[in-house]
Length: 399
Image (cartoon, rainbow, N blue to C red):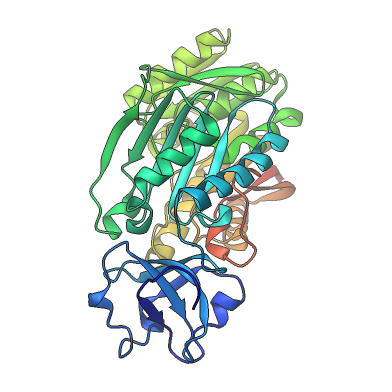
C-alpha cells in the first residue's frame, strides 16, 4: 500500500461489496476480528480499510466501540488532513454558491460531501459546525483551519451537542472557537429575515433542509388561514405570511421558541397576522377540534417520531395520529403539508399514515407535491441513510 502508515482494518470475505458499490460505512460484524482485533484500534484513529485478500479500499477512521466501527474517507488513500478537508470544503462550496445567491445554507452534509461526521451551516460570516464522530473530532484543528481558509468567517461555533456524539462516546459541548457570536444571529430566506439562537437553539439553530419545501407554499396560502404546528422559530408560518396568508397561527411547546416567533413576525412586519401560541401540538389539535376551529392550510413539520428502527410501530402510529388530527381541523377543501425527518419512516409509510387517517375521517387526499430535503443536503446515491426528509403537500377533500 502506498500512502500513510495506518493500522489495517480487514473486512471478512464478501463484506466489501457495499463499500465497492459506493457506501462509506463499515459495521463491526463485517470486520475480520482475527486479523483486526477491534479493541486494539484507537478511538477515532486513522486506518486503511482492506478487503479479505488485503486489497485496499481506501483510508478512513475507526471507532471500535460503535456499531459503525469504520468510515471510508478517501478511496485513493489520502489522509484526512487539512489539505483534503480544504479541497472538499471548496467542492461543497461550489455547489452551494450555485444554489443560493446569499451565504445562508448548509455547506457540508457529512458523507455526501466526502466528510463523514461533519456538519457545517453558514449564516453569512458566522459558521456553526458539528463534529458528530470520534474520527472527525480527532481532526478538529484541521477542520477549523480549513474553515478559516475557505470561508474566512468572523466567528466559528462548535455546536457539539447532538445525540450522535453520545453513541460515539463523545461529550456534549457547545463553544465559540473564535470570534464574537451575537445573542441572535440573522438568516435570510425567501426575502425575509429571521433571528435565531445558534448557541442554545435546536441543532445548529435553523433547518435549512426545509428551505426548498417552504418555497413551495406559495400557490397554496394566499389569503388563507394557516396553522403551523411544531413551529420552532416560525419559518413555515412566517414564510406563509410572506406569500400572502391572511392569518397565521404558529404553535410550539417551547416558551423561547414562541417568543422568537413573535420577534420574527415583528421583524418582517407581520405582527398583526402571525400569532404564536405555546402548546403541545396534539393537545392544541384536540382543543381546536372541540371548539370546531378550522384552517385552510395546516403544516406539520414535527421532530423525528422514529429515532431507531425498533421504534417504528409506535412512531408510525404517532404520524398517523397527528395527520388525522390535523385533517380534523382542515377546511372541507383544505391543504395539508406533512413532513417527516425520520429516516426509518419511508416515503411510502408516511403517505400510508396520511391516507389511513384520511379514510378514517371519510376524506380523500390528492397529492399535489412530494417534498424532499433541500439541495444543500444532497442525497448520496449509495447511502440511503442520507435520504431522510420526505413529505407531501396534499389537497384534502370530502370522500
